[in-house]
Image 1 (cartoon, rainbow, N blue to C red):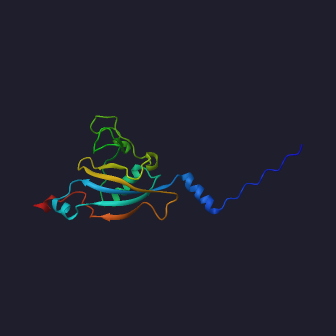
Image 2 (tube, rainbow, N blue to C red; image 1 turned 90 degrees about the horizontal axis):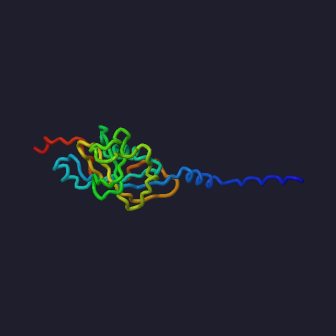
Image 3 (cartoon, helix red, strand yellow; image 1 turned 135 degrees about the horizontal axis):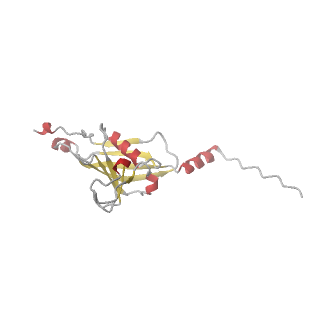
Length: 184
């Protein structure tokens, strides 16, 4: 009995290989609008900047810790502090929200719940957000900078250009620490 020769493997085009690699990496590009809801800002700064937001594009394989760093730089902050992302709640600090923070903050600061999930291991893709979804971001548990993050768009496939990128800025970045003497 003679063996049949093996069929030669089909050659893929460069475009097919590129598309396959992108699919394997599971890359999607998220466009997020991050708006400051509250924080220690002087009255005069708030009057001059009634809306403060940044539109950011980043890949879905970025972790929430990566998103924290992107937001940190987008608002020109200088000093790192603890942070937390909140998903599925109706309001800030909703006890029903799933909370994600850095490993050092995984114990609930209020001793009420089981604490935060790991932001360094959780990617945007793994959370499955959809266009129109909104979630919270709390920076600096002492000064309480509250942010709303809205998913504006999700693009499938490999990213174009360098990411992450701040694509739009509305309002000036508030000083991380307000100078309350300016108000006097």
